[in-house]
Length: 316
Image (cartoon, rainbow, N blue to C red; front, side, top):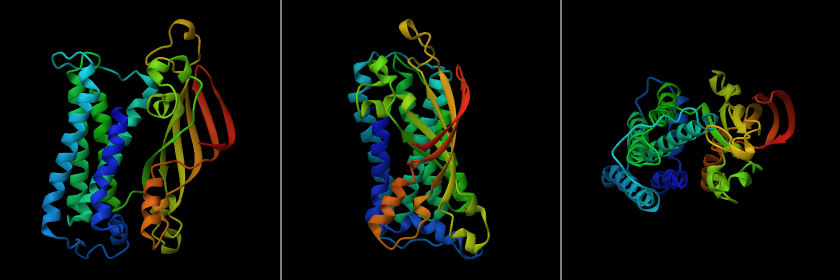
């Protein structure tokens, strides 16, 4: 449920960018290819749009947090604020999810700010600060919930995700390294459906065994040769996933002997938003696809209770 809310807020924070200026997400990339000594390009937008955007973000965050409380936290006992150490759960997959949420929220909010007339630097700060502030608010709600607690590790992962967006924009004026997501159903969910979900889309959000997170980077984005820059859409992705995790910290009962494994993946990828297009719909579709790892031939390395190397002709 919480992940679903974060996805919805990512989309909502990007809506002003599409309404105000569908081309705005290309602003920083275009600027990076011009003389760095030139003054920053700032979109001329109605003053009310620039003033209204922070109000929009605040309203969206308040509505999402309030809705999350009534749909999720209200059904669980509450107590005084406390901390919770969950670093050893799910092989680190939940922390990558927090990193991805922080990254996506920061980028979407930053693009929205740019489209409403803020300078690139202001937009980057707005995106990163909004991401950290909203996600920290959710962690505070966890801190008052008896079943959970405020996780410093989650807060660090949230901040790292927003920071990854901010630093790349400040240093390179574009996102050369992207966090991407892929999913394929696992048989593990049926063994513990209360925790891992039953059916789609519950397992999409809850079953960490079915999820993979990828760091996808474009080598040609680092080239100073304009001819090579044209191939900046070509990328290499390093992924991480787990298998056999019936429980968060350990497998118990009938499943205590199920191997808990970790996996690294290496595969080609595409940065879709680096592909030029004159069509608004196509550019928007490419931007959305930039969060998803394409199916591709993949080399897999496994360790933990199971080791080995495998090659997949097609892996997602």
